[in-house]
Length: 447
Image (cartoon, rainbow, N blue to C red):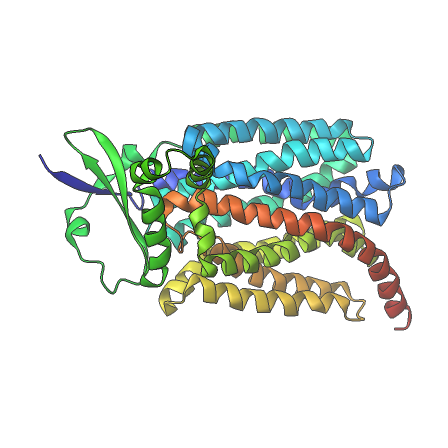
């Protein structure tokens, strides 16, 4: 018998995967975004300086990202469903254990080691699951998932503000940690994509010459009873596919030629497990550097926003309102952005560039010598628009570039580079925060 081609459903159970992805992000990401809102009072009670606060925030996130190099092999070995279950356990335990934090090392253990690793591991796994189910509708699936995610960013600041007014920090962490246990439900919804593949003989026989978008074709050998994957890549990425095939498809030949060299075989195995052939592509490395630099700026600003607004003499309720207005605008544009991009046929890289320019301009407005709270609400609206566009498309840059089977490793490399940016830039950011506070107060005192 022959072989029949199978393709991802591009819908069907894939929409359940979208909901599962969104549920995880809804419960976990806002906790990290509002870490400063939860613990700013606690930090003052413990007498921690601005440098200590910044070190806890940035280094805590960096720990989980630096471990990202191992996420790809874990997902390949155990599949994304099992890995997401482990992620749910680490995340919920980490959030609950923050209620006992009294020293910097306690925050690094609970927030950094447990919660951060759980979040990073989950984001890598859920992203791989979503991209496995979608090809043509990938931007819509990502936009819908992050639209639901954004609802958590709207609701969580208000919930945290309410909980802090009714309970102390420990009680707030306990309740939020209890909510995060629902991540086990989202992990249970992740069924293997092989269960939902669709037959598409036309795609199997269609020539890919001149095709500008990557597609993946899964095949089943009816005699041998196993699945395999055929990737068709963009012409400008032919070097990556060729190098991967040359290194990995002829393993027996390579081993035979180097059978007397155990060291070479060891390095071959490492390269195969971690998909190190990706590092031979300069365009891929350029994408990693650009996305990681942007991610560092975004994460630093998002996590430190409550501290910046507090230095502008806003109270907890005003800070929560600022974040909620920003998140509401972000929510709206996450939903409509895929339609805009699809209408104008704009690539994910171009949409990212536009959003980065908008973010830079809108965030710079926070340093203008204006006192009206309405002005800051307008700034929140502008930042929300830019974030909505950016959130949808910067998560599609790597999936649109690398073959699907290499996506977990590529995402892991991206996280490692993000962690290095945070680990190196975090202490520098902490020292700069003191200068920022002094200059901001001086500027506003003259106006």
